[in-house]
Amino acid sequence: MFNSGQFGRDGSQWELLFGSLLWILWLQRNERIFEPEKVRWETVLSYGKRLVQKCQDIATLFRLPRVGPVLSRDEVCWKKPPVGWCKLNTDGVVKGHSRMALCGGVVRSDLGFWIIDFSRCIGVCSILDVELWGIYK
Image (cartoon, rainbow, N blue to C red; front, side):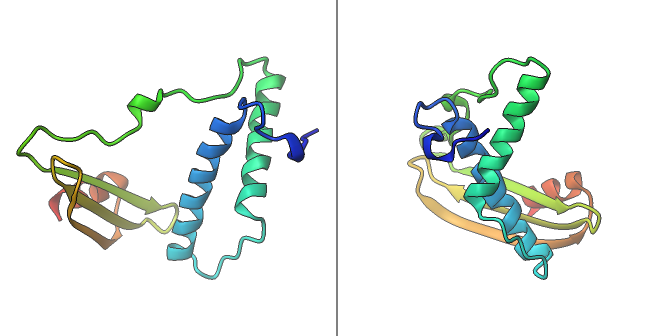
């Protein structure tokens, strides 16, 4: 079974837990926006540990290699635009069956300084539509 006292001390599970925690925080943020009446009683950390354990159980069951990161750290980071340019990063989210959508973005300078940002509730649409709205806005 899962020994929470030793979790991640050898570094083997930390990357999977960290990614899981970020994903859970993102999910809970969206639930608070789209379903404020929904209450999650389990803590983020205990949910994350449970999720990691399930992933490892599945990997063991199907004799998969160690569950871990797919991307290198270099691939998951913001990269500066060329000197004299600004960079626009956008994202959008659509909530399951309700299809309520939000988009947002930020413009940063070639030094990484914030210039302007935005967020909008789009209403009901597809994920492709909300991503395009993010660029348009």
